[in-house]
Image 1 (cartoon, rainbow, N blue to C red):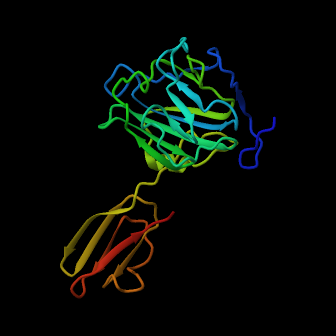
Image 2 (spheres, rainbow, N blue to C red):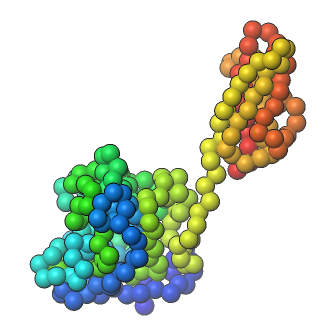
Image 3 (tube, one colour):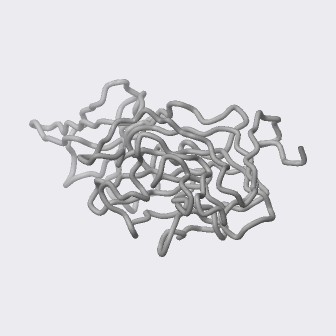
Length: 265
């Protein structure tokens, strides 16, 4: 079809016509119930593996929210434009990574109930912006009704041919860590779950007699506790051997020490 493979692999794709007409779009009956304390879906995440054609209109609709039938004159609500994506003033901040002619994985994670309301945008696992302009609970251009129209543009002037391999919508706003782990596009599609290992950090440090007892949470074992007498020391010294327990004991010596714990990647 004259489009590149995804990371060197052939993939099943769908063509989205770029005709400047109203009757182009795909009904998304997402099944997410209203949330965030409003009457619409205020907290959700839209993910696409997508290629935008090199030529065409200067902007191209990705999503139409404010009506359920792509009504005449009803503009789209999320657009590709200028190698970024968003909508309206302050909506297109980013690194310019969403380039046409190449496959990308884009993430728009909405929380219109947050303070401030925000849409966090990622391209290929790299954060583009926390988009806070023109947001709000039940905002008709951000919060979903029961049905939305993918690639719809009721005033039919902002369209460009596109190709999609996978589209996913999730209830709730995914975390930045989850968006990073989603990474770039894949011929196999967008994974349903992404495992995120909680950050490893000390939870308690106490002294009992001549012993210092250190506990931690997060991360993945086995763990290794290490110590320095001075931060200027070149090398961290192991305290005991690797352990699967989230705690360890060391003998107090001198005026003090610095500790760290390491887990598995």
